[in-house]
Image (cartoon, rainbow, N blue to C red):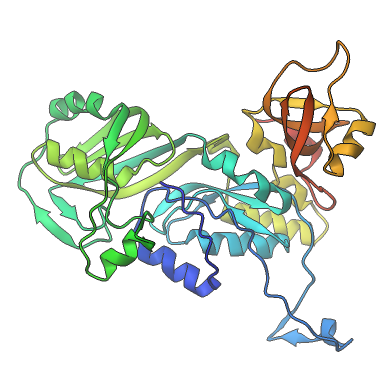
Length: 373
């Protein structure tokens, strides 16, 4: 569950393979780079009518907003982004926090201008429900890895409950060897796959709460954790197993909260595909599946400005705060004009300084989606 900005450029096929090979149940970071279609130059005026296979190539369109996919098990995050981009025929898309194929749950996908707000989602809290299988430690700390140690010992419920306070609050955690952390310029999981011994330094992470949800049998325990940025759920399973006198690894994981997006915001893939089919036949609108771009900015103050000031901000110019009605807030705000998102800005020293300006021309969320469920 760490930041993995992925500044390097890779193909879709390589990205899918990389996701599969990570073997990481934790949130290893978001793809903040917009997902672009390859640029093709063709001066043939008949090009738009040509077919590739049995499909007519359509021009991508501007779509702006968030879709919180309830990602099914077996799909990579990269594949999920590609599917949504195809369903919406969108120009740009990216996700806010990787979920591996064996994990399910909330995968926030940003379309269009929403990609500018991905870091705000990445910095938010995450909530996971996960199952630890006792008795085996694996090199990836999850079910896909190779068994490296075994034990016949099994922890009691009382021992587990007594342990939980040690993993609550700010703790020191050693990330898994199979993680996206860079070691001398190389990803740790690449070095581990090459057989190199990877020694990662402990780092502070914050776990807001960790509870035992169920203990269906002696071999398994179900937990819920709400944690901050950079926490590895796989490392929790590994470390709890060792302290309890046995070993442990993640064998199931579901993400139920990412920043402002909870389970009520999630939409299963089959429902999303059905909505797209209805929209294609004129029985609905894809806008109904979108959440507004500013949903990702729930924890940031909103600041309304006049149309005259909005015009200056849209040109990248600062606006002076004047008069007794000038806002007294400072720091990061999101600016609106006539109820419409305009920019991310910094307020200080008596002025508003635009940092990111939004251009929401195109398909956006339906008006009803501005109110959260």
